Amino acid sequence: MEGPPKEQQGPPAPDAAKAETRLKGHLGHLTTEEDAAFTAFKLLCAKEGYYRPATTQSKASHDDGTMIRYLRARKFVPRDAFAQFKDTEIWRKENDLEALYEKIDLKDYWESRSVYPQWTGRRDKRGIPVYLYEVSKLDSKKMLAYTSSTSKSKGKGPSPSRMLRLFALYENLTRFVMPFCTAAPGRPNPETPVDQSNNIVDISKVGLKQFWNLRSHMQDASQLATAHYPETLDRIFILGAPSFFPTIWSWIKRWFDPITTSKIFVLSNHQVLPTLSQFMDIESIPKKYGGQLQFECGDMPNLDPALRDCITITPGADTERYFLTAPVRWIDAGEDGEMNAIGVGSVDGKQRREHVATLHSLATRVATHTERLSRANTQQSQGPLTPYSTKGSASSALASQSQKKSTTAPGTSATSLQPPTVALAHAKVNEQPAHPIQNGAPPEKIALPPPPAVLERQKTEFVTPPSDPAELKTLA
Image (cartoon, rainbow, N blue to C red; front, side, top):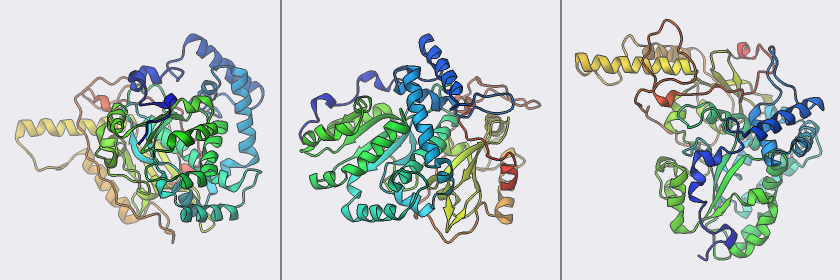
């Protein structure tokens, strides 16, 4: 394989994986000038009627994680950021995008998901979600079927139906994956919401003709992200570049703005594992690239242990696959910090509103850790107990509640539509050394030892408020 283009030769700079490098221009790490620009930007958006600040009675119309992306994309010039933000708000309204995500047919969603980057269920060392895109799987037959399918779909607004399908995937990134990674424990700098993604793009076994046939498909994704989902990309690692890639790079880079182009890195074969392991734990790197993660495009996201340990999937057949592969949004359950995942979209024309998972509050996870620590201390003083013995414990009570729910009512409504069949991933709970809690006191009347650092979480506003205050009650 020939080397990559000179301007993209080799891996990122050695300090690129450091948190302090990524955090420049992000919430919680703004300079005095950037913070002033952020305030001015929100005031301008509010004055023009495109943004509603938070009040004592309601949340802001847009979370700060979304707002800062527009400002960062326009180099912290409030007027320029407002112009892009305004265009996006008009575009969303013209195409009724809020309703589209709520109503998109699951077959259409899954079909679109199969031809674009897919979340592996893992995060890098900074807590950013990792996506994988295997371009060789997009053969002419598959792309012809997809093009034919999108041509039959009709949207409300002026945007082509293929773009609206793609929009749903970006909405899943910003409304499900990013908030999930933001709220999960164990990541560095929890004061800063996760608002970007990392992408591994595998172009091995892709011929020149296939590249040419995919040009409009790839342009769609680039144009939509640049115009309406700015700064959602941290970086792209291109692997398996064929010998002719330096030739086609000259026209591929025209699809991207200069800032995006600077985030693309073409790696030679011997650079793949050293570079990826600089950003990701070996357990989160797919096996085919030298890691330990069992994941290929088409699989269900394989959640890392820290993510899996802080959620409870609603009992029911295939609920986990719907939770991880179908359109989902989060809503806040209240002041306790719990977040509920609501499955949306439609099946056979019938709109879904299904509770599919709960991301537990920090207090709940602290209590769980306390029970585990207490059990461990009992084992040390009284001798070893049977593994998984939880007699009289909080875990036992929770397990009992879960069994009752499983026998009384499934968590999802029965449908004839089944998501793609994939093997479910299983994860073990990591025990961590104790560490003082830093973002809130534990609940009263519970004598708690210091919780582990992995439980630290900063409560954010990075959620979608219920459209109806009674929404959670109707889902109960």
